[in-house]
Image (cartoon, rainbow, N blue to C red; front, top):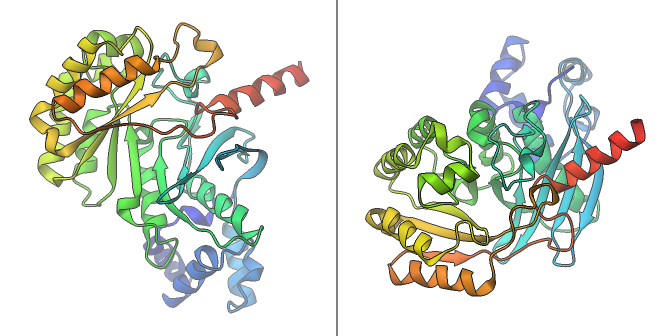
Length: 356
């Protein structure tokens, strides 16, 4: 199967063209056709020779994704189900924010992290996505607007969809370089956020890459006992080791880090948990930000339910009184399959029923 040309960094494309006897400036032409004019076929690149187009067609495809389902919520959130060339399916979400259009991308087919509250892990990891398959998610969302004649542009990206981004580190980094390129989609580094469940060695590697990309940590509990019950990854990288890596990141980058904290009734939402969390973060409170997340119920995880508003507000107040910057996340897409992985899981069940 031919790879997607979306997966090449610009310097990789320059090297590939040079290997095939082509000039460096051809890469800029191709790049502009792909990301500024956003063509969907190589033969639409009208300033390239027929032989150049044939060479590209022989070695690459452009878009590796097929749109299967689109769900639009009343708040403007759009959820896409895409099929990959090997018939696996992934989800991508567009969210309308006050600051612009934000897209949440998927990085793996399934997830091996195994968080007990999450719909993404209902289907175990099948494979990593290529960089081209991740970039294509952004491109298809942008085409969604282009085809409707809407003068709107994807301005922000969060790498928080199905999968653990740092378990697919190299492809995710290639993806970031492609969408950040000033001659391509030109999505600013500070408009890109990568979320991890806590792969400590990769957090250190990420700190060393020199990019101004935002980092978010899926923490969800203030101590090892509760976190291990929710997140299997905590056995390998307990909170102490995770915090050491975070300290390294903060010292190296001096950039603010976000802690994601999903609110589960009776599990991690007590005032005592809030006090523990405040104590855990107190020595870094100038550079941390806590995002309290309402839980989207998943039928397969019926042991969990959403924290009540009063409990969320009490939790929030404890953090604020202890000088921890925090916010209660605004919900998006509550009238569609809101939780990450739900739409894919539902579609997979339908497929099994049809083929049974």
